[in-house]
Image (tube, rainbow, N blue to C red; front, side, top):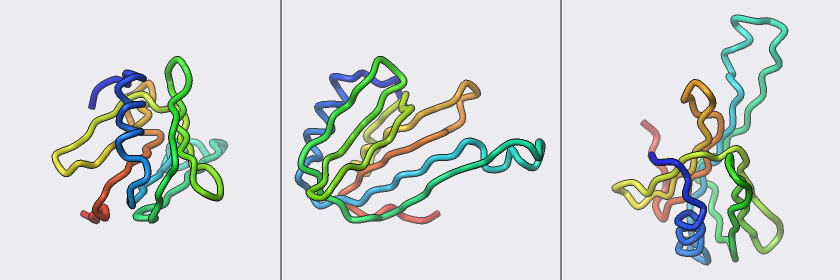
Length: 117
C-alpha cells in the first residue's frame, strides 16, 4: 500500500462509480486492547460483501482523509484513511493505519465478492 495521493484516489473513486460492487467496511480501535486495560472502551464495525452502487464519491481532508460514497438513498463513508492500492484482483482498497502501522479502518470496493480466507 502507498500513502494516499488525493488526486489519484479521486480518479479511482470516479472509475468505480455507477458499477455493481461489493463493499467491505471495517473499523476497529483495538478490539483486543481491553484484555490489557479493562478501562479501555473498545468499539468496531464490520460489513462484508454488501452490494452497492454509488452515484459519486469524494475524498476530503488533508490527511488522514475521509472518503464518502453517495448512494441513491444516503451515504457511506470511511474516515481516518491514510493508504490505498488497487490489488491484482482489481480491488480498490483504502486503509487508515495508526501510529503503530496497524489497520484502524478499511474501505474496500470490488466487482467480485471478497473471499474469506
